[in-house]
Image (tube, rainbow, N blue to C red; front, side, top):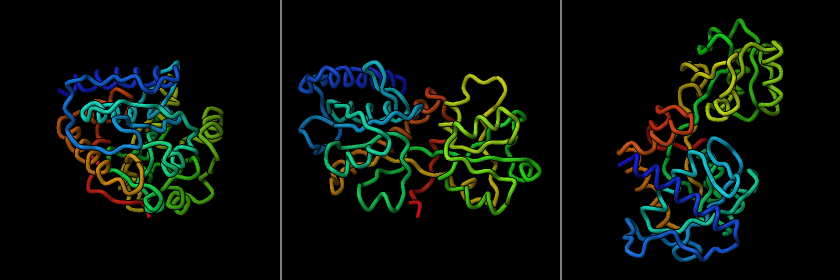
Length: 280
């Protein structure tokens, strides 16, 4: 069942993207005899408009097709609810505003479930987690082992303050993964810290470095409680919230979430989100 859903989801999103790029948003990929699992209200009847940034391996738009873990998951949701998909390509910074301003029903792109975000859009139940990961030549995964090394991290992550307290001046904070990668390759740092998904994408072709999930450490909260990812969607649309949550629960139970994650180079264990929690 999960394999069939994944295959159909990929097909659905390809049809969506081609339709959107062609400018004809009225074309439908929904079968006439389709029976929706839930009654879902959307901005345009029968259409789910998706704000999609360029952020592989979660969301990517190229040559008229949307791919990535979030793209596959939201396509599976649309399919079971007989909704045609309409793609709204955005910058990463513009994705949430697209939902907030009612230009899109839902956003994809590995968005953390935060209390601040929940004030302006509604958030689905957690779909998967974005684990704290290490990038190194020696497969370093424990924080105690990092204490004798030079370590770098991309700024903005939940673990930055805690790791600064642990490592002090041995931690270098970078504005982006590109600068950190340069120092890692040159040997100026020995370990890099980043979200698992973005790190796995950046180093997927590297024979010199491995990307690993960091071992839990009581001193670093993010190593124990990874950030939960959900689908931001239009504020006050309870029918969409309820349908998303029900679909997510079903896809977790039948293995679809785990399968889609692994198909996109993400760890199967990320599907084990635990109870819903918001980052404060």
